[in-house]
Length: 193
Image (cartoon, rainbow, N blue to C red; front, top):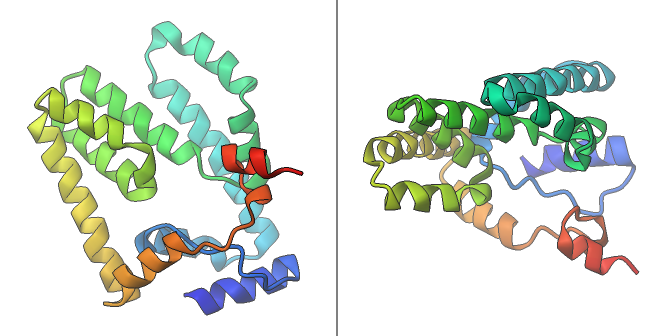
């Protein structure tokens, strides 16, 4: 709901610049809805605790042989600290990817597919290479499970947002209005005056 997003933007940031377009599937917004029902500061503290637990769980799911190196890398990771300090959700795809990796390494192709489907539904732009690798390795069971999860997420997104969702979503993705200097990516780095 763009109007609700604008109201939150005005309340928290004292602006209505239109720079913060929600570009996730509507089902993801529904998953975060319970946090919007509690006071902002409480939700923020809860989110930070969940983030710490999520990073910890991801580290625990990774192979024990490299766990110590993983913890050290996480402790000095700009991305991990950025996510924690600014309330980003990068720990979720990391946790899902760790569960996917563990499932694949144990020959549990179907459960790996479920995890991949969740990851794709959450941040589809991060996982096309993983899908290509699975196609090349003919991991059809994994791909079917992932496809079922993504399909369910798309259908649920239609139920949450309504039939105009796909067109509105494509429009939002192509017209975010975000100022490049505020983007935390290579484009933002280049845009800094």
